[in-house]
Length: 133
Image 1 (spheres, rainbow, N blue to C red):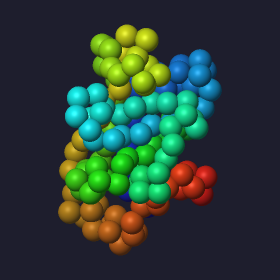
Image 2: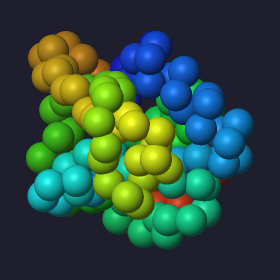
Image 3: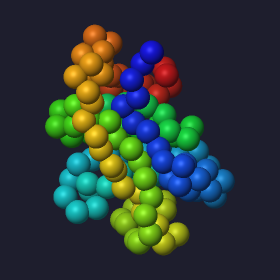
């Protein structure tokens, strides 16, 4: 059984579904920059160019989730959970006008989970990773 690198709370999943109905298929990217750059950004699928170094962590609510390569190096030992809270996030993320913002909650993988992930090999990188999933 594969270990999930990214999960979604029920509240965030509900918002992703609402936003998908409004904007069409979506995608997430976690850049790891400062300020709003440390929050997951949600874009209409195809509006953000995924680079070859971006790491595909998985699919939440039928939505691909990528993280920048350098940020993955820091967070490779953690499971990320996308959650939602009241308040405005970045103006670039589709949820901004809705009075909510997505955020990341994280937890360290157990030693056993991390060993299993290492045995599975590196996660896929680049824009083609979601298409192959």
